[in-house]
Image (cartoon, rainbow, N blue to C red; front, side):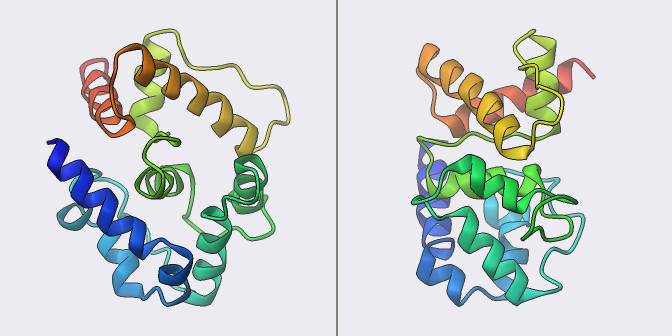
Amino acid sequence: MRLQEVEVCEYWSVIFSPKGVATLTKQDMTGFLSFRQNRRWREISKEDVAVDMPRLRTALGILIDEETSITERLDRLEPGRGTEAVPYLGKAKLSPILLVTNPRRYGVWNDYSERALRGMGLFPDFAAGDHLGAQYCAVNEVLLGLAAEYSLSLWRLDIILEQLARLVR
């Protein structure tokens, strides 16, 4: 399993690098959204985020820009609110991209991880009006804490949280 994690992160970190994003194709993006190629997330491929490739490339360039705070990046990409938002490109697609590009820094926030964290009483409270960036930072802090406490990679933690979430349906 560790080998799979390393292979997937190494491969997709090249695709989602600044140079890779600049030349990203629709096939690249749909490949990432396919379980066959990402080998981890089965349910992120429902909607087509690659309808407007120039807009998607801009958004992904913002997402991977480590010179800018994650809060600011995600606020700009927040569906329905962000200035650079791409339809259907929300936290369940953005956070796996963050994970594969920086697997020690960013965890995955999706319905499974949220359900598991809520079930454990660990899901953070958000202030009224918090945008996606602040919300993600709060969730990611919990994910980083759990990974450190149990000596897990964020990839492995994501697998465990999904398994827990499936138990508490």
